[in-house]
Image 1 (cartoon, helix red, strand yellow):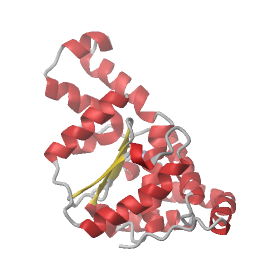
Image 2 (image 1 turned 90 degrees about the vertical axis):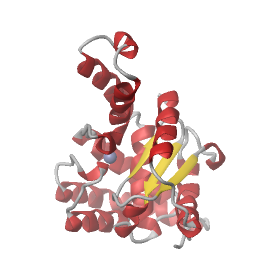
Image 3 (image 1 turned 180 degrees about the vertical axis):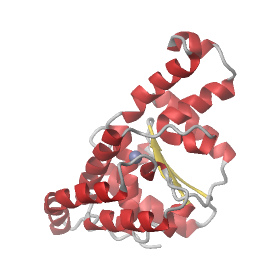
Image 4 (image 1 turned 135 degrees about the horizontal axis):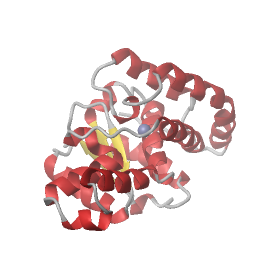
Length: 230
Ligand SMILES: [Zn+2]
């Protein structure tokens, strides 16, 4: 999975322009540098690659192999550091919980109608990589919509909430973010595409915010309130 993530990330970097705005880069990196240390499996920001892509879609993604991509269009909806952290936490959570793994394998097997091993040998390289990307949650970009399941989305929301709170971001802002997204209602990003509904998601988050607030207040007390500005 790591190898697929790394390879996919390289492909995206080749096909999508990278933002040349140093302020935006710095802002997104600042948020990433706070969240990554909360990822137990790999807490060293130096081992992660974080890239801002110049693209209007309101989206972000994380890939196995310690890769994070953020599209500049997301910043229209994620209006402050806490809201951006909510999205990045959610995306990293999909990787932590290994949500892509079963999708990549089932997608490859289903589409090809044969064993994964055989499939790896068949199809053009482009077809194979498009399916892998879809499994990793990047299908929308490649015309294959393969959303995460509702249960994966819920799980990513909750793990993400925990990550952002521990990182010193205000968890209540996650709700505001989803509200911004719901209101916009256009070109739904990965994390809006399948969810039961914005309301269900918001309700679930609200229930968990008191707990997340305890983590957040702890982080603040320890001087870890984030201060990332655009
Ligand atoms: Zn998601």
